[in-house]
Image 1 (cartoon, rainbow, N blue to C red):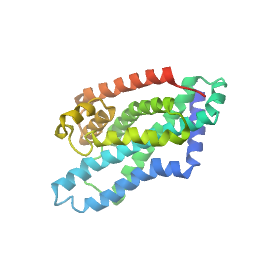
Image 2: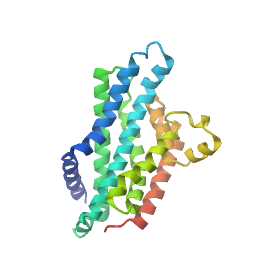
Image 3: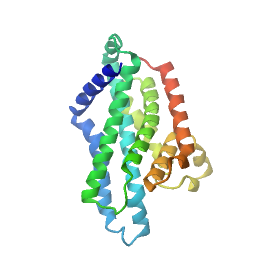
Image 4: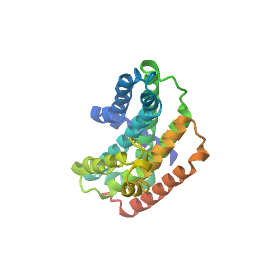
Amino acid sequence: MLRGLWKLTWIEIKIFLREPLGAIGTIGIPVLVFLVAGRMVGRRALTSPAARSFTGVGLPVLASVLILIGAVLSLVTIISIYREGGILKRLRATPLRPQTILGAHVMVKLLLSAATLVLMVAAGKRYYPVGIHVPLVGFTMALLVSTCSILSIGFLIASLVPTARFAQPIGAVIMYPMMAVSGLFAPVESLPLAVQAVAKVLPLTYAVSLLEGIWKGDAWWAHARDLTALAVAFIVCTALSAKVFRWE
């Protein structure tokens, strides 16, 4: 099973990298946003507390959320294309188990997310030094945990979306509004009460909280609530996807 998983994962990575637009959107855009925004705001970081806070915490978390959402939208699109093209049906007829087939797509997104984060931090150290210690291992783990949870939403969307043409727009309409109320741009506590109620049921809110905390150097146990919420979202969305997922 593991051998089949890794072989299929490697095949999917090669297929993904053959499509320039997919690679640019998933890998290039988060790195570009990090570098461009960092160079624009970084010059003011020494004199402006707000700029220092943004470059020190807000910007890397923003870029990481873009990595996460890019992975989800890519997953939704690929699964929909594979279903519409009959590829999922043909894969289902092979000796590979369903969890191996779908798990390979998850592995691809996790590996690309980790690689993009490492590239982002490496490029930032060279061209945009923020003068802070980067907890790269812990932050990468936080990003992967968050990505696993949010990818389960992507699987649920991919299970329900009618055609590949509408897959990415529908995914974008669902995912990007989550960013606005997730605490990424303003503290959740400062939002209107009705919006706060919505934010507290969205897993992206807890992903942002976890990413911000680990980047600042918090201990993992300090974010037990965030980890629990992400785990619950993963379990619920995975269970729903298993019931409604269509192979053809």
